[in-house]
Length: 287
Image 1 (spheres, rainbow, N blue to C red):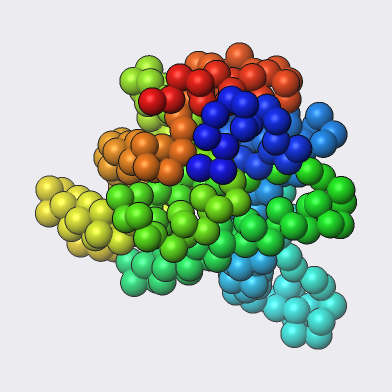
Image 2: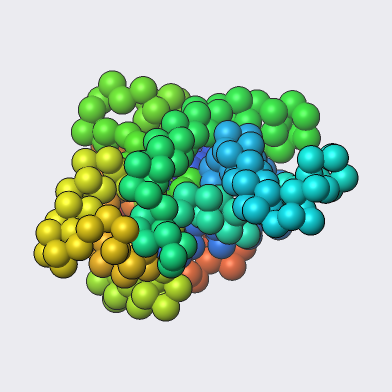
């Protein structure tokens, strides 16, 4: 780790961290708070994915749908309209909409082969965006004069790395640049995340082996063919399993590559100074 003690952290003229964990536990909240303090650069992995690496896929998907409408088709064919996504740090809907859900096309589902293709695009994009972290640290300092840097990672970071491999290329590169901090939720947090997801199921990225096993199990248990699957029902069924699948992977990342803080402690942070103090206390308590 680039900071091994509270003294290292407190004395560092440049503080650089990466926050990871399930979506909804405070990564973006803390990142926004640090950015608002005026001396932290906020690098969002999901925003980078949705703009630099998947922006063209997203825009092309919008155009594909627009081409089905005669008026819009004519305007597109004559370059009379411009279609693009308006993705922001706090609104990643264009990215999740493109990622989609598999199942019945009448209910907005994608053919499973197309769904897998988009999942692979996301995997490649997420790895590339994570590996861009070091370059953005340099850009933040050289271009804008930011000494402090927070990387707001996506919930699926644990799916694109091997936290038990000491030579994992992504984690090795990140560990040279940032202190990785897991925001760990409790059982109560997990229950609330499941309830929230049940109310508004959203597309997400899954590790390929996990996804294939879940898909085959769902088809078999419900005696369904691919086109008969309710997309929302499938992702609801998969979500709690995905949380359980990710938990030990997050824990291994924290154990082998960084720190863990509780979501309860994160919820109490109201300033950049409060965040810095929490990191110092966590380093002090780390074996």
